[in-house]
Length: 314
Ligand code: SF4
Image 1 (spheres, rainbow, N blue to C red):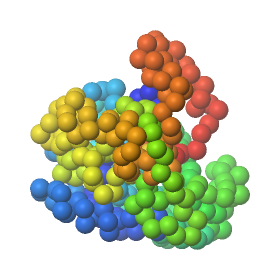
Image 2: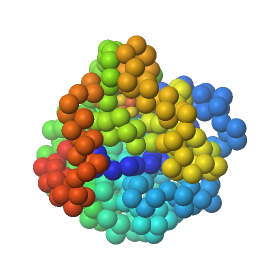
Image 3: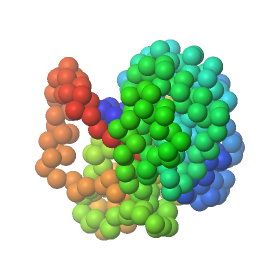
């Protein structure tokens, strides 16, 4: 993701049937049921459109977070609507729930990212490899989807090797896997899950624009959480079915969150998250840069960074 860019991630559904070992689904579902007024299990296409119509065009729309996006039967309609509404799009998927026909509908979209999370030998990601899965994966490989990248949390099962070889991803067979982390302390440490010890003093998140908190998550009932790591739902910025996008960053909840970033003693999720860093001169410079540097220079630098290549973070 362009670190200077705002993004809004959609959890299309509550209750992911894949139930990967590094995703605290039970905790999240229980907290959603406690806090949601409507307890909507899926976001309706109408509500999705209402929300998209409020969000400025320069906010990237992401399909990821809290659940496999394609478990929602209208996910492709949502992608197409966001695209027609001039948003840049990113998708993070296991491809479970996706069909060959749907790929034909969205394959020409110029995605910023289309990241496929592949199964692993340790079954950290419990993705069923069956005939349909292999057909859909092959269709994706054949479709020249812009932004396509692969990720996994471990070595790839051998059954996928012929497809990886056939479509030029042979080197991925040697991939050791992205690290698993404890989602800001929400997950019991197990096996090789990485955690972070508390950082005191002012902090910043490189993944969310330093202290800007501009990579947010919408849940099926319209609730906006400040970050997809907040499985405990302690920091809700508002509800996009009722509130404007701009108001999310002006209200008391947002101001309190900013105070937590700068407080010396506060103990909250970001301090335990593996992405957090101390708020240092680098972030101050970046804030100045993205505020005052002309956007064409920012975009050129971002493209150079993309060519160099980075792994998806989460
Ligand atoms: S530090 Fe972690 S929890 Fe906080 S905004 Fe960044 S990714 Fe989210």
